[in-house]
Length: 197
Image 1 (spheres, rainbow, N blue to C red):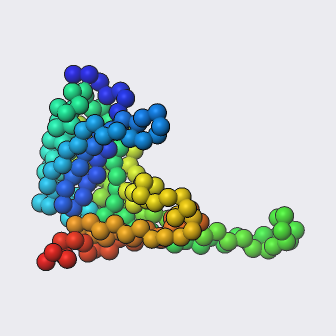
Image 2: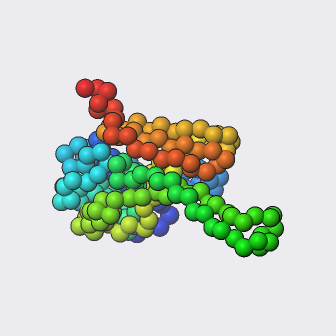
Image 3: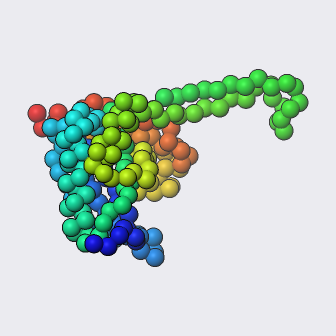
């Protein structure tokens, strides 16, 4: 079996399914999908949070094997999208008082407004443990709503202001953009399963 060279593998752990996808970047910047595998996750992931480490690890290993079979190559590393109720956005204002005449514009106070994205420590540890047990090295974990926005929204939409609503099985994620910056992130613990019921 060949080694992973010219393709990228990503995993997303959702409340209804875990998805693994392998793709290859084309010269024009687009992505060609080479392999795709999915498995039901409703018995071990709820609201985007892992509740059974062993079952999740087995699922990840199974998806990796399915992808390797389709690719006829060995997967040596993956990227992971993080979302669900494990994350939340918290606004933070940091003021700084300045001595007179210390900046280009006369001011005695500067203020920075930040959106801090927080992730539960236990979730992060459990997720890493799952990939460790499955024998899958993780290159990096990405904020799924941010990456989804990069794919779905145009730069003009993010600049002029918009809200991206991602309706999942157990959670709904709302990401608000303005002037090309993520301004608000909220995860609501209601999803399409609630609508179906």
